[in-house]
Amino acid sequence: MRLSKQNLRLQPDLTWRRLFGGIDHEGQALTLQVRRMIVRAVETGVLGAHARLPSSRQLAADLGIGRNTVTAAYQQLIYEGVLVSRERSGIFAAASADRLAPAPAASAESAPDWSSRFAMQPSRLPQICKPRDWRAHPYPFLFGQYDPGLFPTNDWREAVRATSSVQEIQVWASDMIDDDDPDLSEQLRLQVLPRRGIIAAPGEIIVTIGSQQALSMLVQLLVGRDTPVGLEDPGYPDLRNMVQLATRKPVFLASDHQGVLPDERFARSRVAFLTAGHQCPTTTVMPLERRQALLEAAMLHDVLIVEDDYDADLSIEADSAIASLKSLDSASRVIYVGSFSKVLAPGLRIGYVVAPKPVIDELRVLRRLMLRHPPTNNQRTLATFIALGHHRQHLARAGKAMLERAQLIERLLPVAMPSCRFSRGAGSTSLWIEGPPELDSRLLVEMARAQGILIEAGDIFFSNPAMGRRFFRLGFSSIATHRIEPGLLLLGAVVEDCCRRGRVFRPLAEPAESPPPSGA
Image (cartoon, rainbow, N blue to C red; front, side, top):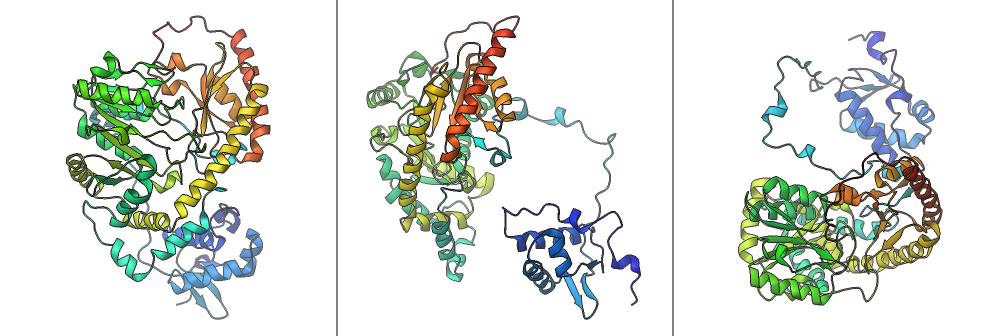
């Protein structure tokens, strides 16, 4: 068959530089990026059948990468049948009957009115908003994000290699139905939970896709339309949204400087969600006496407690660890939620619930109805990572780095932001900052972002956003230590500028006063 010139070249308006414009020299291996882009171009028809590709030398020069990189990508794609090589002619896109057909244009007239079909609309609830491109900002003072400089890459690779043998794959590749990887459950029982003083029996642990799924399942299991549910205020916004979608009776608990009070609000709750380790977002560490008082009140008034211990493993001060509520519970009233997101990487998406066996049995069935079980390969890799001692070593290294950052920030803040008050519970990786009355943290977030600084406005954490207008959270798990000082000094100048604007452009009507929110 003789090919026409049209079949041997790309469309006139398409250049190779445009096709490969997404090359990221700091990202995934360049060979993989080139292969992915060629496969996508072939599958979507951008590279038509028999279209000729440039020589490896030409493409390497166009993209500013090594010729060997392009050659390796071409050879692998030829082996896979995506490309074909013709002697003395070059490299061409292979003919295929499996190319994606263009999607038919949707008719606006025939489309359903989706808003009328929704049983609920979660998008209307206040949402946590963190920039997707936060790594591109020089001063990301965000809480709970992954720090590439602290991730134990080599140790994690060893665990991945160890769980990638044929024998290991045969173990984790099967359908576990509603079960978990037994190795991970064992490592949680032997190495992770004892750090929090928790002794769990077999059958009292279930693995989840992060603490978020754990909380969601517990809300589904324990909360009905008329269930009074105790919530911290300020507190975790996503949990507040989950509860408000489930019940008409949220109870915003009263707090003082030690955390939630065991008062009548707590007593009338059927279930209460607490962050005793580091209160979200104030970082308050609940003292032992208050924990014991809450447990006594829970037993007296028949209240169940869900303890969200989201970052407890990373106790960056040696003397900061306080026994978890679960470890003090002698009446089986505390359900414990833990996660590896804050101490290892949020993208790992592995959390867990520790509870009496009847609770775990119901959660297993509920989880199976939702997604069967979390990916078992990730579970097995994490179990191996812990068993080899890498998790314990990582906690020590990361804790040392976090403590260095915390001490630096606490030394700089009084100079950088003299008009603000700040607090940090021992062991926390964020600070809760209260600005002067004229500070609008939403405006501050926008002004700071324009300077390359990322912080979190405080109003999202309050049931009444007006009460959080002058608060913001400053995290330091995702910012390199050498960027902290210039970032804080710049942020301090932005805070003062924002306050000046607030004094000049005061709103016509101040928000109506309401009782001080618990935890504020």
